[in-house]
Length: 180
Image (tube, rainbow, N blue to C red; front, side):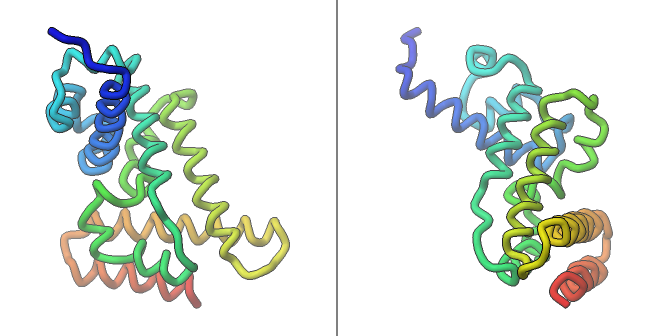
C-alpha cells in the first residue's frame, strides 16, 4: 500500500481529533471505541496507533480541540448560546465541560484528560472573568467560577430531564440568576 504524505497524515490526524471531540461529547469517553472513531473519520483502525499512543492520548487532544472551539461574544451572547435548548440537544457540538464532567470525574487523578479538563475549567472561567465588570481580581474569579458552575450545571440537568419544559425552565432560571 502506498504511504500517505506527511501533509495527508496531518490532515488525517486532525480529522480523527475532530471526530473524536464530537463522539466523546455525544457518547462519553467510554461510550465510543477507537474503531468507531476511525470509521467515523473514514479511516482504517490500523492507522490509529501510528498517530496516537492510546485512546487516552486521543481523548486529551480531542478535549483540547473541543474547548478551543470559538466562544466569542459579550456575556449576554455567551449566555444566550450556552443556555439554549439547541446547546442541550447537540452535545457533540457543545461545551465539553457539560458533556464530559461525569466521565472525567471517574478518571484517575493523574490522568491526562483530567488535567486537560482542569485547564479547560480554568480557561473558560478566565474568559468569563475577563467579561465580568471591573472588580478585584479575586472577586472576578469567584464570580466567574460561580457562573461557570451554574452554566454547566444547568446544561447537565437540562440534558438529564425527560421534560423539555422543565429543561427550558432550568436554562431560563440559570440565565436569570447569572444575568441578574
